[in-house]
Image (cartoon, rainbow, N blue to C red):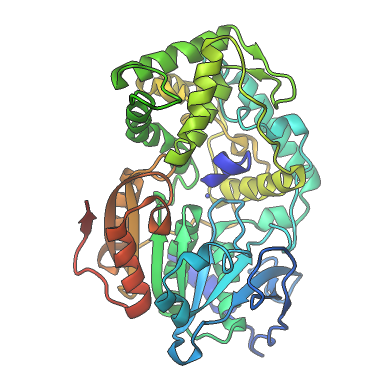
Length: 490
């Protein structure tokens, strides 16, 4: 769900899946060899190479129209120790990992980098792969717009925004937007695997990438080697996407106390209260005041600091404790009746691209309720129980007005397949809370082992986790050694 944080954007019947699985691998003639060239971009390892893989736009018509998937590769640092290829599956929907072999991949221990070629890619719809866009109005890209209800809790305006965005996607998204879903993301990865010449492939997926990795492991279980899933989403195939959004209720409740302790610490230059217990009521009062009396914020988008902007800033800042000062500065400024500096605006073309892919994935995976009354009832319940998020996690995304029905059932994650999956999960994760990770762990059964890390933030392995968790994951990738049972890293 990083699309909510970073990109204004905010994720089966076995007979159907088995029927599709036969033509969804490599074609009978086999994949064409990849034509590797120098990658564009700055700051990349000079050894990193790039190529494209042609895949079907519609896997039910594998001989029909093709789209391209952009792929990058950083070869093993020690060919004699090379085991295979490690896919770096990005979050999102709307994330790209093309630069990750030269970026976060370099945080991997040398033994892991020696064992694998590191493989990045741009998922279907994301530039520079065949690209999707809904051509949205700039106002509909604002983080605090959808699906936050209005200050009185009404979803009427949110439903109108959903219809406007969905209509734009139908009008401007072309045929590609109808073929964006997680199952197709997984099928594309199997085409990448085949083009790389690998009989099996390992993967490190984070956030939304954990669902892509899970679906790949379900559709192509015997083509998986060592699978690491980091910051895990609830795999409920009846509520894909909706369950991820709803998880912010508990995610915020899990994480806000950590912010409160930090924001009340003596000596903190961004201290907002003298006691941790005072931070929550202070925040709620301030949000309500900004609902009633927004502050003008020239140059920002939106151009006012209102209650939902404060709440969205909270949500964004809780992803990483390093971002706590952003929320504290906004609280301190707003209490004085002023505004913080205008944040740097993200690139609009990137926002448009990520918003379209996020929309296609979330809305094509599973049908969402259409009734405004359904969302209003859910929002009212959520506001009463989880005031910090003010009903947003149960609000209507644009999927409430999506003009297309899913082309296939969402993939159901089961315990069928090899036991080669390691879940790593921070105990306090605002976007992928521990409760959802436990649901994925249950779904995998004996196929998986989970490492729960006593840490705060989104992204555990080599990010916001701890040395214990990092060591377990690194050993698994390098040697295949995995704990015999679920493990807690204190």
